[in-house]
Image 1 (cartoon, rainbow, N blue to C red):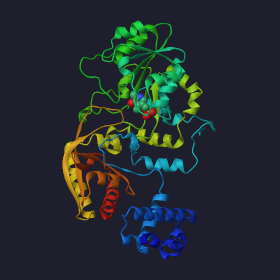
Image 2: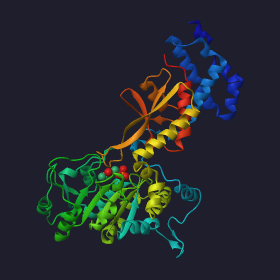
Image 3: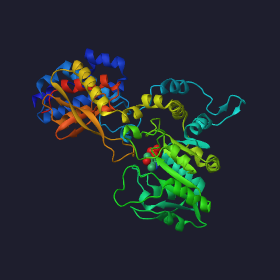
Image 4: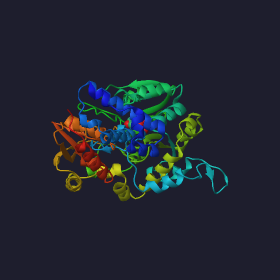
Length: 467
Ligand SMILES: *Cc1c(COP(=O)(O)O)cnc(C)c1O
């Protein structure tokens, strides 16, 4: 118990030269909170009999206070290194933006803009106009509108087109996306009445035809997103659904989910229609996300026939769901890249990562290994292994993309300890454990991540082994 007596008092600690330096850099209450946290942790360690005497040295305690202050003053929303291999990782912020977006975002964020000001007319303009022509040009649709996210787009479309009316949906498409976005719930919120047709695995054109009455407001097709129905299955194509809708004058809507503007089939990513294909099929209103396969900021994009988009523009919900200027700037800059398909594929990180071949990733793995080894102490051992990565973001749930992984071993740490320490590092690194190894997928490691990754690995190796 004599060790408890050796723990210094707060006032004393505040006099230490190292801590006075911290006081010059941080507000006093923050330093005080940091000092108290550290002293409390030291007391707890003494009681648990896990404290080394050396940890009570002035230098050791000061270093610990400095680390605690770094933790206390770090922003909550932080950069993370995604080593999971899941390209569109919703928990990790989905799509990183293309570097080309930065200047436009900078310009709009830190100054005034013509957000809702028509510079030709000198009168009030529309914020939606900034991307409408681009979206029309890229998708072939007559009209376009953007909102906060795809969930908002679906809610707005249902509210504007189907309140008090029946919406016909296949039982195979009544999906839950996660984060409690369920098609039946959104429909209720939009004031529409769900009319389920078909079965989980098979829905036929006659199922839709038989469900259409004078009460029908919309035929809805929902992208199955995060699951796949395989085996004895049948679904009605967009073309067939449009034909059925035309027979009875009922508009057809598609929630395309990820909504790709590029055909990625030559990269082995196939089986999902592009937005252009929905438009060409004659679907009246199509909604999709901005931050999934498109690789832009969080946004909900709506394209379709002018007569069907017009009621959405007039609906009071639009004001509540409206897109913010930073998002709009990032979206416009991202969409511009799509004017040149090669540029989009090369410069939009989500597309670049998804279409990277096994050979490219193997080469990238070797480069990453070389760069990391140069920056790391020898107790961190690295090796390349083959593996599989996933698209994520509710797209291509069954697709397995061959990849190269970096297996990491650090001193005597178990994979679980390593995983936890990297996750809690100043720049958090998220990987996965497979068959007793901690792995980082080269597919989702960005170039700018490599110095950060090296720093976090070094930090982890420097810490004392856990007892
Ligand atoms: C992801 C997804 C949504 C929700 O999109 P957010 O942009 O996350 O709001 C809705 N529908 C489908 C089919 C999806 O895949």
